[in-house]
Length: 405
Image (tube, rainbow, N blue to C red; front, side, top):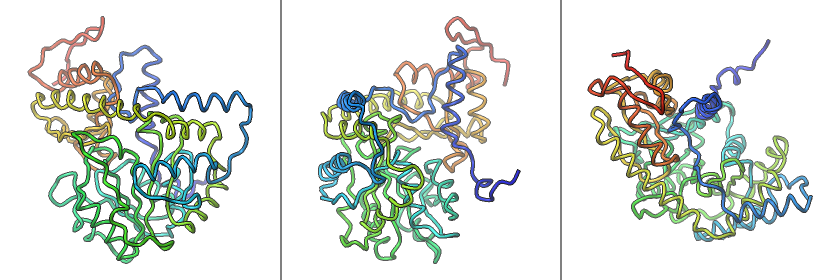
């Protein structure tokens, strides 16, 4: 069998694989605690559900325009005005089957073979693979000071004549770090000056803690013309807990959106009419669901940090947003994949290995679950790793005995 060179270079999605493994274990009745997923457990907003149900009842579930329905675009225009203070036109918008597709289509539109794409580490697992799928070269940037916060100098030092694009994800998956306003201003202005595309992945921008406010990249853009190379990505998956609805969008120049639409038309056609109805319903509906989710996640973050701070040998920086914490477990095991497999096998706790996000020795822990999941999950992990813990642990009626050092 002949497989293309690009296809052979692509790794499977570690996050989706973990979700699959977790589902199989749960189906078998295993007492699994899933601390690895990026999926809020709250239900989708009632406005989204009612909008989708009304469309299904009508029976008018036809093809959608390749770049999204008028109703969906009007909702995105409203959203952009409300949260970015920017009025955009329908031709500046493409609705896609998730923010992931919006990013992918954007990269397919702008990249040539061997073009380089820069993104700070730690980074979302899909960025490198998406760049490679387009024949490009992923260039992760590691902050010189060893933190999760890049500086403009970190970026500049990695720019070459082949640099085509920078991707910024703040709040960041997996670290939960919110990049400083100064950095956002500098990266917007630097990319403008250099003629480099800038993709702002804002999928978590309303899930912020400690009274932090979203940073608006448009505040620092000086080029409002159609030659602007700024692309803003967002969607309903995270803030509205609508991961399965698969609706995201991109806002960019009309020419870019036109080409992105051509590509998407041949890939998947337009996103599902039913799902666009739901997404528009969420955006146009009561927004208290977002604040409720945000408050829950902040409380879960605080509980997780209390648990981790009492865990000798673990170093963790409190996340400023998202629903992840990126914790250093290298005191116990420097191979994060080995560690994640060990915890899944021994105590049935799922976490994401840090190597998938570009940094070894760390694991990503999700706060999407219940308080019980968080506290019991960390207790199991501590029991498995801390030699000072009791030799036995009960998970329900199951008795575990530590038979390892």
